[in-house]
Structure formats: structure tokens, C-alpha cells
Image (cartoon, rainbow, N blue to C red; front, side, top):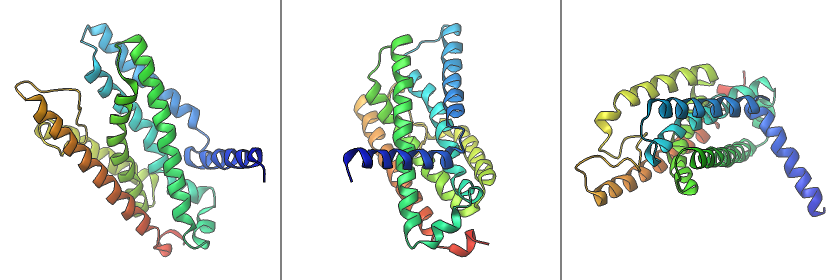
Amino acid sequence: MSLADVADLVLRLVRYNMKIIFAQRFGWFVLVALLVFLLIAGITVYDGSPVETPFIYGSLLLPGVLLLFYPTAFGIQNDEDARVLEILFGIPNYRYKVWLVRLLMIYVILYVILLAFAEIASIGLFRINIFAVTWQLMYPMFFIGMLAFMLSTILRSGTGTAVVLVALGIGLLMLSDTLDRTFWNVFHNPYELPRRMNEAVWHALTVKNRIFLITGGILFLLTGLLNLQKREKFIR
């Protein structure tokens, strides 16, 4: 098999999985995420609020969650709707490989899109290091995405997963002020140094927060993969 054949096979595999992951609505999700980002930026500029790196990081969080939300929360349901769930469970351990590849694809695509959004912000709003900001965004994205994936394997419903995630998100936002100076804050903004806090202390807090997000995300991923062993829960 030539290199061109391999590339064509990989491209077809990516397209096929993208159709299942995003249910052929990928373009609409990107458009909505871009509009949300532009709306947030436009309102801030109109109000005359300062636009710097902390703001750009925060304004990219919501579009990132919007892009991540559907493929991770509705993935199992989309497999069932596409009638491929029984096929995946019929091949030993194949479902793990399929979902690991899908999750990798989701995060690679998410990184590229957020990088493009960050470049737009850097050109139009405030000059930033787009690679550093986007990389920092991937920590909460990893945590939230793996949480959504785990919940989807427990609830087996995209709508149910969405409801639980929204409730958890609202709860975390309500506790954000309380958790702001701790490493437990999922929405921790590493670029927003609080007043009267030493920069070295804030950096150490950020490192602990990133370790917490990575560890939590890995635990959620492993739990979700273990839940996929329970074939009787998914095949009726």
C-alpha cells in the first residue's frame, strides 16, 4: 500500500468518524462558537472594558466548551442512532480503540479551532502568545470533555448528560469566587493574578490546578472506558 493510499484511508476514516461524532453538524458548531466569541468580544469592547490576556483566555472558554460539549456528551447516543453500537461491542476491545481515536480527533480539532480563534483575538483585540493561551485552555477542556464522556457512558443519553453537565457547570460557576484562590477551580484563569497575591504563589497554584485537571480527566476517561465493558447496559 502506497503512502497516498494510506493517507486516503486515514482521511476517509476521519471523515466517517466526524460524521458520527458531530452528526454532520460540525460546521454549525464552529459557526456558533465563533459567533459567541465575537459577541463576547464585541460587548466588552463596546463597554470599554480592558481587553488583555486574562479576558481573551476567559472569552475562549465558552466557545471551547460549546465545541467540546456535543461530541463528548452525545457520542454514545450518536453511535446508537447510527446503528454501529452493536458492531463496536461485537469486536473485542475494538470499542476502546475507536473511542480513544475519536477523543484524540476531537481534541486535535478543538486545539486547531481555538488556535484560530486566539489568532483572531490577537490580531483584532490584544497581542497574545496564541500557542501558550490555547495550550492553557486545553487543561479545562480535557477535564470537562472527559467528564462528559464518563457521564455519557453512565447515563447512555446525550440529553441526560447535557442536563447533568449544565447543572454541574452552574454549580461550579456559583462556587468560582469561593474556589478562586484554590487549585480546585475548574475555571481557573492562570493569567488573572489576584490583588495582594505573590506571583510565585499564583504560579504554584496554577501548576497544582493543572495537575488536578489532568488527573481528574484521566480518572474520568478510565472510568468511561471501564463502563464500556458493561455490554448489557448498552445493547438491549
